[in-house]
Image (cartoon, rainbow, N blue to C red):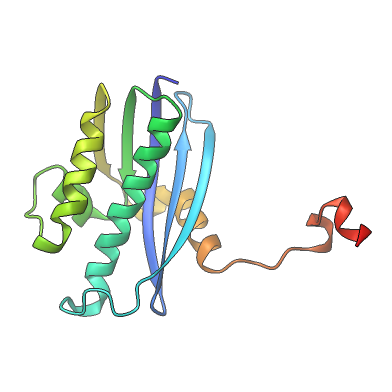
Amino acid sequence: MMKISIYATGIQEDGRGAIGLVLKDEVGQPIRRLGRTFDIQGAQPSMPSGKMSEVALGYRAILHGLWRARKLGAKHVEIFCDLTTVVEQVNGLAEVTPEFIGSYLQVRALLNAFRRSSVRAIPREQNREALSAADAALNPSPPRVDDLPLWASLR
């Protein structure tokens, strides 16, 4: 694969956070969809309204996306993220707070591992697939009977 587009986001709810990722190929077809949860209770209490946790989730989402793209053999990556604070920090348009220097440096190092890379902010409405993956990780629905594998009934 030469070029991969990464749609990344992070959401939080009741002290829990989740990231959502959708990786798409050159023609826009999804090739990976991923949602992961993180316990963010009590994380960075110095920032009001959990803003710091949202930034931390944004960095984690971008890092996971970059690692996945690297494993898939991408040479070019485009990252689309609805967390504008993270996008501005990664692009050098906003100051990186001390607690995110490590995450910032990891993202910059991984971006430099690709021949071409870009990080762009998009509205949340255009990031629905990644939001859906994060929401599914945060609020999993129980499996339906139709979704169980055939051998599950053999027990």
